[in-house]
Length: 339
Image (tube, rainbow, N blue to C red; front, side, top):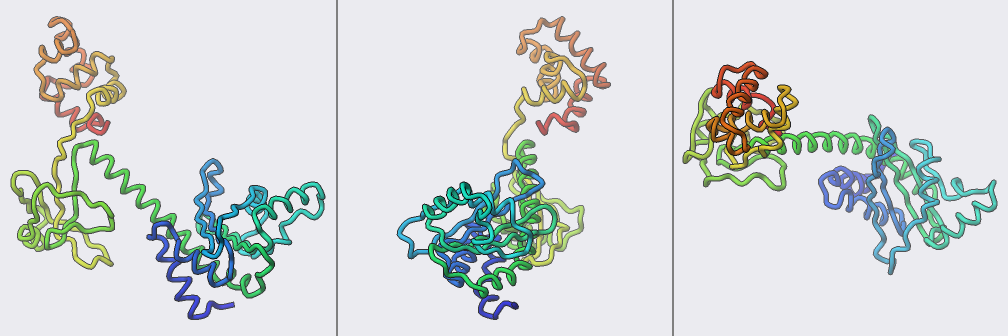
């Protein structure tokens, strides 16, 4: 069965738009419930390759139900363990007929949850991700048309699963990049010609100075090596970034300091592992990398002046540096600032 034009509008579009909806796929699931007459609709997304990972569940309940009766756990276990991919199952196909005791338990659970009919389909996405869509009703109501609809939706759902996984990966990388910049005490934004942030971030970074459209307009046509400083706080450079789909071309990248400094203890732990320093040596090296004079740094660590000088010699020997200035360069270009 091919999807009717009305289903393409009412179901397919919300299915893809649901990737950016909060809650995810709310409109799609509600319209699927309306289209099939289901009391409840559930979509479960999981990764079989990661059995310890909690599945993502989205569930809607028809407005006509005065209360949500829930769903029995025994029914869920059958959904996850029995269904073959891309085949629609009716409720009778997953009930226990061969084991009377388990059948009685299952019947009681289904009755308590007011489940008299169901249609279920397991859909495999690209890679390891897969989904289950479940239609429920308290009375026998589903027919061949509802099964055919789920079958027709399966290819689109498979594509959406692939997009969902890809978007999740991109967001994870973006979060990691932002966390690293935060550790370095740096923030940045990609700006258009009017000095406005670009991207889909719902909470874009707040620029530390007012808009600078004139600078961004000039940089949009400037050579790659051009740099501008705005009010001594923001470094602007040409973006060099070109992405299809942006309504406004990227003109400049703004970078600024947030004022955050690395935690000394965290940086010292990294120096210990990076250069084989003792705990006291690493603490002294970390202080020296911040420009603290040698004797002052040692006294802050409750070291005698003689011990401080001996530690500094061992630090320079272990790190292969020739003095404090060389040590500062080594630390700032190493891993300690990322601690």
